[in-house]
Amino acid sequence: MKLVTVMVVVLIAWCAYTVAVRHSALPPWPYPRNLRLSGSALGWLAHSSLPHMFGIIAIFIALGHSVLAMSGEESLARSIAKSKAQAPQPEKAGAVIFIYSLVFTSLVSFFAVMIIPDDVRQHFLENLIGGLAMNLKGHFSLA
Image (cartoon, rainbow, N blue to C red):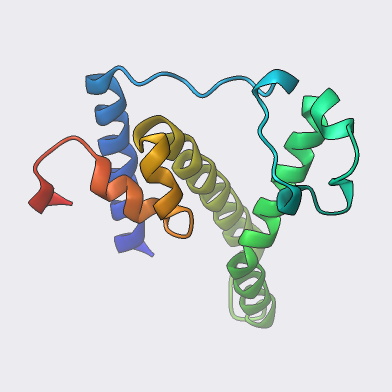
C-alpha cells in the first residue's frame, strides 16, 4: 500500500505539472448543452429527455457507473470485515480506503479529460491511467 501511495502521489503531481505547463482547459460544466450521452450510458432512461434537461440527473447516472467500477473496494471492505477481530481500528482503515479511492478515482478522470486529447482518449477508456502515462509532459521513456 505504501508503494501504491507513492505512485499515486507521483502521478497526481506529474499530472498537475502537465496541466500547468500545457495550460489545459478545465472540463466544461455539466450544463445540458454540454452533455453528450449515449444510449448505452443512459440505460432505461435512453428514450427520456430528463437527463438532457437536467444536468444533475446525468451526474447521478455517472456516479452510478463509477460505483459499479469500484467493485474492488467491496472486496477490500469484505476482507476488512473478516479481519475485524485482528485489526485494531477497522473503521479508521475503512475511512482511509474510502477517501483514498474517492480522491484517486475522481482525479484520474478529471486529469484524463484535461490531458488526453479527445480523439486519443477513446483508445484509453478501459485504461485511463495508461492513457495519462502516455500523454504526460516529459520524455517518453519516463512514462
